[in-house]
Image 1 (tube, rainbow, N blue to C red):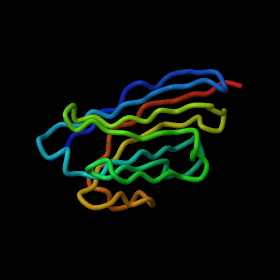
Image 2: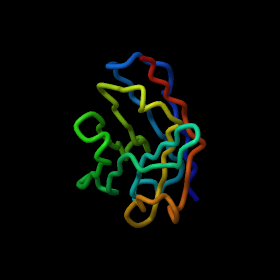
Image 3: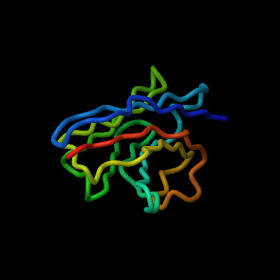
Image 4: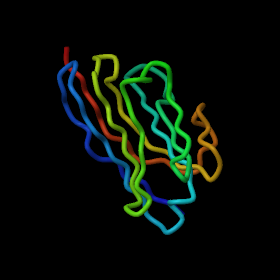
Length: 123
C-alpha cells in the first residue's frame, strides 16, 4: 500500500515558477514509477510528466516540455515537479500517481493516487 500526499500548490503570476511535491509512504515507494497529472475545470485529466523508479527515464507532455521538470528523491520518498514559465493554461489541480509498472499516461490503471494540489496561474 502506498499513500501519496501532494503539497506546494498555490497562486503564481504568469511567467513565474512553482515546485510541487508528492510525499509517499511505505518502504516500497522507491520501486514505483511516479507521474504527475492535472485536471482543469471542465476538462479531462491529462498526463503531465513521469519518472521511472530509478529516475533514469523521464517523459513529458508536449505542452510542458522544456518548462517543467520531474524528479524524485527515493531517500525521502518524494517526487517533485518544478514548474517554470507558468502560463494561465497551466491552472489545474495537480495529482501524483504511482504505478508498479510504467506510468499509464491515460491515467487509467495506475495503482495509487494522491488527493491533489491546486495550482493557479494568474495573467
